[in-house]
Length: 111
Length: 377
View 1 (spheres, rainbow over the protein chains, first blue to last red):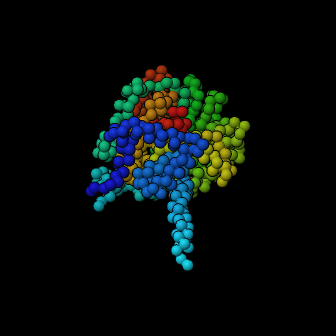
View 2 (view 1 turned 45 degrees about the horizontal axis):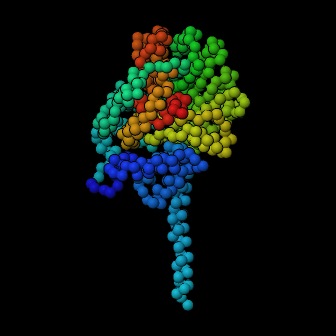
View 3 (view 1 turned 30 degrees about the vertical axis):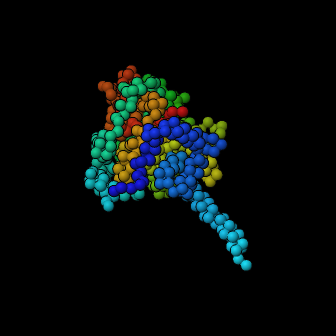
């Protein structure tokens, strides 16, 4: 069966540089590592943000990766689900806030 | 399409049919269920079987050789760890001892005396008492008193499962007894919520564990300035690795203090080792291959150099000697002629090579894992 998404492919992510543009891949992974390190935010908090982003951008690889990562970092079910709700409500809000543009335009066009 | 789990059961029909659904807590040990994984030789066979794994993974020896750690040798033996028996009031889903109320193998007073003879002759920094529930051994208190009579300063750790304190009236005074003999208490609490704790350790375990922790706090354990140490042990409730002991400790402290007023000293993060009931869980839940691959890919040479078997001696309930509690459960006795307390030979034990196998990857993954938590700081 052929499919665009294969969970085994996630393991190959780290070696994309072997195919080409090695320096760019190295730069990216260095940046990636630095971003997720302990900083002003804990790496645990960062992992929850990543889990929310993974859902909003609907990336199956990232959902697998950050479900595992948040569990490993000791996040509770409520924390994980609340993070996804933040992503969901932002997505809904982003849609709804655009209705102001619709309302403006409608007012412009109607008597 | 047939599920992977179904295909797995076709490949290895001897496991899955005998095991209850993996979301249920077992009521009996693997041994009592006459499950093949209750046999140590069979576990080793599974760990080294490529068909079960479905892929090739390097042997643990192949990882140690290039970093000069093979053969693996002790550095300084300063922890004397005694497994006082497999009897336990709990039947945890991940238990590497396959402990439970149906296990009758516990240390006799004669074997305890052999331990005391060794302690009289040799100096150790720590004596680490584990099980099962060590407190269920009828000679537990006598043993502690004898150890204290020999060595007033030795650090004695009791690996207390917490619920035992509430299990029966005769155990209610354990916190006082621990305090009287200045024991360090190390207790498992897989999570600070009931759902994830109970899913691993059984229904109601979280609630009783919280009550027991409050009882320990009440006599001074975990309280600043009391000198009474209470450490918690975290291990993942599932097929994932622990990560970030320091961050996790902060989170546990915050949550337990805010919700239950509980205080403790340190949190130790321990990786689940793929043997016994945890191996059974991995196989039945279809997580085995991925888990092993993750352990292998997370191999950390620094953790390997600091593995606990280099400083620990593990004593079985029947007086046999092992490199660690996991080798004990796999019936891998120490190399060399003297394999029992009655033939104890410190010189030979210091010179021996530690027995390794594929389960050892569990102690070398990521920041490493030992009975005292992470080993690669």
